[in-house]
Length: 336
Image 1: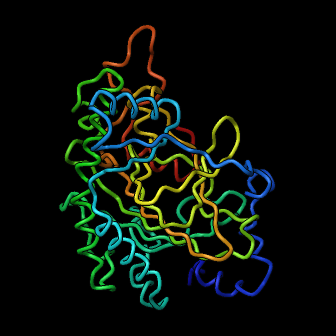
Image 2: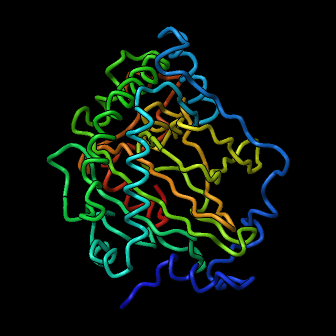
């Protein structure tokens, strides 16, 4: 059975003022109705290499993790050229003829999320997101399956490998600061989610122009399953965050990385850090893209609140379970 890709739907809808009914969100989700207008949220911005001493950096990251679950980092040490090459390679893949992209399609019965696709999780009321995507693991080398890495454009592999090489020290620093920020030693939080065995999963989101961005969403409201998400956006704004019971647009900062606290960090920290509830809107005129990398525990690893953070006054708020079981429940909308 051939899957209908959003890119194809967008091409057919280009000259209309309507979109297929399955992409129209219910009123309590429609961006035009639910977004606070006239205010762009300025989430915390943290200078990773320059402005802060380590103590100040730890305090800033910890405060952002507690209060927001989201922050942006600048001066992160990844050259603009490296990010530009990553973005160019991803954009060129999505501009290929459809048949060439389908070579990388996620197998129907696959356990892994890797591959080119459209649907990710159980769709509530049959509603679809206005997005196509490509998933593949990028680290560690032992986890990589190159059959999901596009051979076209030819620069794709090198662009991704160079980016991940530069990204890993950023991730290590964030884990260290988040760990120290709740009274742990610097290595403890990363160790609790698999250490150097942690899996880096790249996702490219492709949100084509949508004639009715007031009615559709790219990705619906969710928290990320992973530990941390480190995301590169293109220049088309579209990230929204749920704060104080309202949806707000997030300010776009050129060359910043957007960091999401995911479910596993919330669990590890026994709720001291909060996973951020967020969603993606789409644009009428322009394609929006983003490149999140999800830092995931190995599938068989059991994740639960770190014992040091548990005592009589702070009982565990979350179950300890294998990461693969957590993922299964989340994607199938089953209770945890």
